[in-house]
Length: 366
Image (cartoon, rainbow, N blue to C red):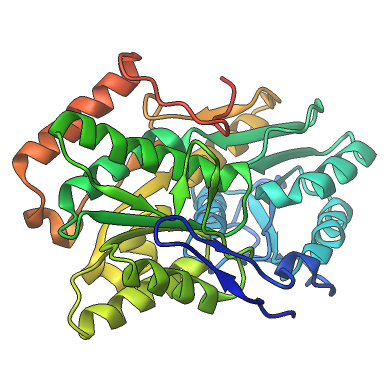
C-alpha cells in the first residue's frame, strides 16, 4: 500500500494529493462466504452481494446494503452469500465466484465496481445484477440503484449553517467521483441557501461547487487520511464537518472527539447511513446524517426478482420516495431550535414539490 504524499491546501479550499491510491492495490479476493443458508423451508433463491474495498463493516453504504440483504434473508426466507473485497483487484474474481455459485441476483456495492459488473453480467446473461451508486450500465440483466443525495445533503448544509458557532463549516471527499461530489454539491447549496434566507455569511471550507474543486484524500481505505483532512478543516476554523469518504468518516470522528477534548466544540455530519446507529462511538458529536435508504431498496429489488418481476429500469432514491433522508438530530436535538426544524421541514416539502430545485452535475437522471 502506498502512503499519501505531500499535502497542499488553502485557507478555504484545499486539495490533498496522494502518491498512490488504494485503488491501485493488488490481491486476491476472499471466497464468497455462506451466511446462514436461510431458515427451515427457505426457498432455493440465492441472493448475493460483493462489497467494494471498504468492506461490510465500513459503517457506511457497504454495511447498509449488506444489512438490507440479511434482513431479506429473514423476511423472505432466501439464502445469501457475500464476498468482501479488500482491493480493486478483488472485484472481478469475487463476481465470478458469485456467478459460479449460481446466484439468482448479485448486488455490487459502489461506483468503482461498474467495469467488473458490466463484464461479468455480459458474460452471464441469465443471472441478474443490481449495482448500487452507478447508472452507467445499460444491460437487460443489470438494475442500477442510485440516489439523489444532493437533496438530503442540502438539508444537512442548511442545518449545519444554522448550527455553526464559528461561521465556518467544512466537507471533504474520498475520491473525486460523482457519488461523492453530489453530497458536497448539495451541502454547499444548503449553506448558500441559509445565507441568502438569513442574510448571513457562513463560509464553506473544502469544496467549491462552481469549480468542482476541493479537498480529497484520494482514498477510501486509509482512515488516518480522514483524520488529517478533518484536522486541517478544524484548524481553518470549521466547527461542523461532513466527510464523504466511506470508512474515513471514522477518522473524521476521531479527530473531532480529540479536538473537543482539547477545548473545541465541533460536530460531525455522517453520510450514507444514520451514523448514530452505525457509528455509535461518535454519538456525542453527531449533528445528523445524510442517509441513503439502501437496505430498503435491496429488499424491494430482491422481492421483485424472486417474484419474477426483475426490471433493469434504474431506481432513483429521492426525498419524495424516501430513498434519501436527513437523519434525526438524536442526542443533539435540544441544541437545534424549533425555528430551524420548521424551516428544514418546509424546505423538504419544497424540494419534493419542485418549488425548490436541487441540482448537481452528479445528480442521477430520473
